[in-house]
Amino acid sequence: MRRVIILGAAGRAFHNFLMYYKNNPNFLVVAFTATQIPGIEKRVFPKELAGRRYPKGIPIYQEENLSALIRRLSADEVIFAYSDIPHIEVMHKASIALASGASFTLLGPKDTMLVSKKPTIAVCAVRTGSGKSPTVRKISLILRGMGYRVGIIRHPMPYGDLAAESVQEFSSYEDLERNKVTIEEREEYESHIANGFSVYAGVDYEKILKLAEKSNDIILFDGGNNDFSFVKPDLLFVVADARRPGHEMTYHPGEANVRMADYVIVNKVDAAKKEDTNQVVENVKRLNPKAKILLSGMKVSVKDPESIKGKRVLCIEDGPTLTHGGLPTGAAFRIAQELGAKEIVDPREYAVGSLKDVFQKFKHLGKVLPAMGYSNKQMKELEQTINKTDCDLVIVGTPADLGRFLNIKKPSVRATYEIDQSGGTSMKKILQDFVKQQHLPHCELKRQGYPA
Image (cartoon, rainbow, N blue to C red; front, top):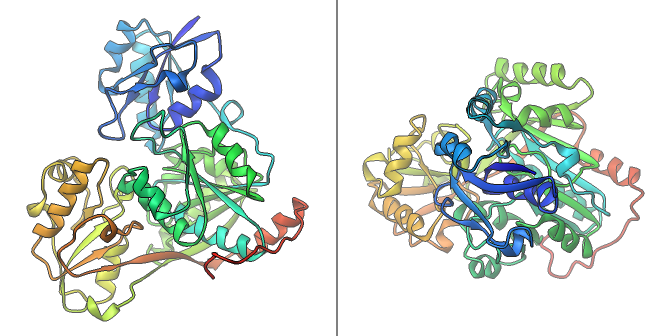
């Protein structure tokens, strides 16, 4: 029996365990490790999910001590199971494992993808923050307009009680409050709920998929980071970022996504240099000549544009897009520049608690505040940082409505963004063809309770 350590401990790692290792007598998983997400180490993957072979559950350790951990636990194999990481860093992890005597393994789609009874569309990406969420919003609304019920399954963000979060369905803002979700989870769930859709997430995706299949005609998988889909797609969209040329060839598993894609959406062409857009397009053609390429911009807007002109503003951005996504700024910064803000205030000197550490760790950040909120304490520190900052106006560029759960004592506006296709076959035509190919009958939804 081979003794295994799984690197990840926040989503993909748990999924790989449940799909491949849980009931496999040839392997014994002796540990998970944590690295990308703060505050999740020192937990235990619970026995309720781990199964009868693991009566005490499975411990989670910090990955920084990997070499010592391999020796202490007599591990034979290290499984890499997280996303949005440069290729060279993957091989550094492999080198640590090999130097410590262990083998190094990546599990692929055949071993980890569930197969749905319903037609499945997946939206994945080259990097975090490429534009998956607005793409999923657009697809879901088009399909509902065609008369189909769409179940949105979101890549996992299991940061709390894992046993309690095994299978989750979010259909209202009350569901968010009851489950005490993080800001990152709100960023992904709120807009779908506002559009009248249910979002399914958690830890055990076999059960999650069965739940979503019960009341929906089409499954729409909304990927996290640049991970590949947990559910085998009949149609795969992959979103690339024209502002980050070359990343489609240098990040894991973003390159794998491009190579698997049916359609690659090169997004943010309106904010990128033409030569950068061209480079991404050429790289995609080289990696996957069969993929069809769509071009899109990111349309950013606020309800009251005049409120920004001449003001000293604090720009709050989507957290993961800026931190491990690597972008210096986001939608709030862009709209502040476009609408004539007098000054974009640098929040560094006002940062409180763990927000100070964020700026120290991510040196690439521009004059923006990432919406960090992985715990109640960090949410409070974010609130304190916002209220402490010397500014006239706060521009909230994260998809989460921070005013719902933070006490922001300054005037604020929300910057929203949607993809604006500018080249290639229209999304509606692609989805119409998909529905025909799947032989789905047309069905008119009862519109009560569904926003137009």
